[in-house]
Amino acid sequence: MGVIFALSDIPSLASSFEPFYDLILRKLAHIAEYMLLTALLFWALRPYMAHRAHILLTATLIAVLYACSDEWHQTFVPGREGTLRDIGIDALGIIGVCLYSLDRTAVRPRL
Image 1: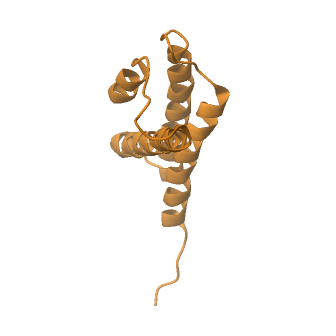
Image 2 (image 1 turned 30 degrees about the horizontal axis):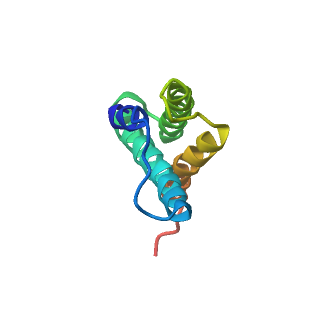
Image 3 (image 1 turned 180 degrees about the vertical axis):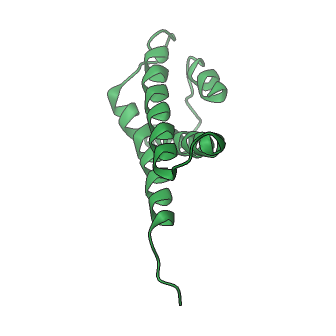
């Protein structure tokens, strides 16, 4: 969360790539950072909760709330803006962890 906050506090994150590729790279970074955040939250909450579904739900809620607060934080940074679109893109990373986790909990027949 500290890394995300620090990156969000930088006035401009433009790269030397063409604008289209710069946009794609930044959006992929959104997905990756929230995927990692959700996975780390899931891992950190495991010792404190008994059911995997509760852990996943709690990690997901924390990550979504943090995505909202991060976009709000960016509205105070010159040259940055907070958008609902970015929250949606962050949610793609969060959903990726949920899908991975749910796949691992599926009942599989033993061979």
